Length: 264
Image 1 (cartoon, rainbow, N blue to C red):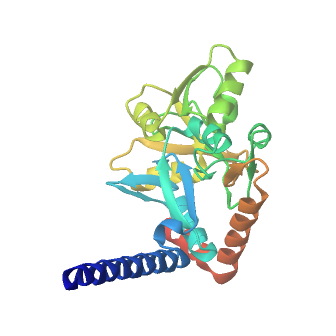
Image 2: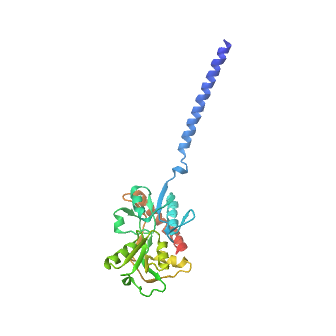
């Protein structure tokens, strides 16, 4: 009989301990859920094309440049964890549309065509186009001299669109489009094209930083109303508002000017 009682008591003790463990486990789970971890923080996945210095470029595994500093600063003041994804420039707008990325910042001009596909923040940079030629070239002095020449530009940019317009006006014009603006400049350096049509700040940065360059800028800045914006999915008013608020804060607290001075 005593053995039976002992067995009963032991069984009850095991059941009591089991219920106690289940109760503790459930409490821990609830506590963990009540405190959001890093994975639950707001993340902003931003696409770029890191071949457009000084706005975006890649150094090792890091993305640097004016745009990169700007979007990270916006993320900081608005409480976003910013993740940068590098992709082809022409893939940025479709990726925003499909939701593959939340936003795109890549020296992207706000144009009527793009506004049909995505929404843009307030402009954050005034750009404009400039012509670059070989330093020995005396034939090209302005946009009027581009007809009938070999022109180069980066894929998907307003510089590329302008080159195509020149070709429409004069069919003898040859247009070469490169995925990387650096490749367009290299082609100019070796004499493969007569001119590169590109955003003025990017061309100026190239001439400032390139070693032993044979290129120079000619003529005046044109398409001076060209402005850059951050693209978001059409109708995403909440994200658009958050980005515009962040941009306004950076301009108000002086951070925008600090980033600008760093790169220009």
